[in-house]
Amino acid sequence: MKTPSLSTRLVLAAALLLAPLSAFAQDDPKATAHPASKVVQNYLQLVLQRQWNQSATLVEPSSLKQLHADFLRRLKAAPTMDDEQEMTRRVGKETFTEVENMTPLAFYTAYHDGLQERWKVSPEVIKKVRDSLTVRLLSLAEEDPEHVHILVRTKHSNDKALIENLELISLIKQDGSWKVALNEQAPRITPLDQAPALEPAPAPQTPAAAPQPAPKPKPAKRK
Image (cartoon, rainbow, N blue to C red; front, side, top):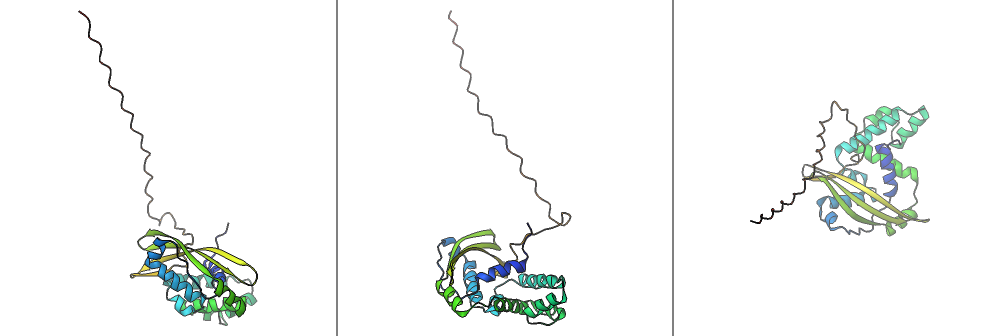
């Protein structure tokens, strides 16, 4: 199965995050006690309110660069000139060079503005999503002191259905602050000649033999 690109995963995530946040039902004490949970709340609130410039400040810089680079690769691979022109106009530009010269922050903002315009979600539907949306922080997994992953359950309704989603948000600690890592969940492939040596698995331990009972003393001979 082909792994979705970073931009594809962001499109799917942004489809959920198109309306302002109405409530957080935080149930897991470990998740709510961790400082990264506050970043998750702020990030979701800014994204749902479509404040892209501010939400970008909560994203680690390499993720913004990766989103830009991923789009440029797809733009180069556009099958026709019409497809390339459509993609460039989607981020408010006219040529490949203009897109290439965008800063990662400017691209992030234009990219999401283009998605929002493309979906053409009506204000009435956005209001219904906003009024019905609940978010629960279900659990937190601490991979190491600088990497955490927070599992989030979202639920909202539009004018047609009740929609529930399970989202996993990854964060990295940089310079003492937690940042959302958009590409942390992407598969990593490292050539073996560049990868650190794998530690051999510990050899299985043979269970110790059960102690043998002491031999019974022989009865004394009768004289």
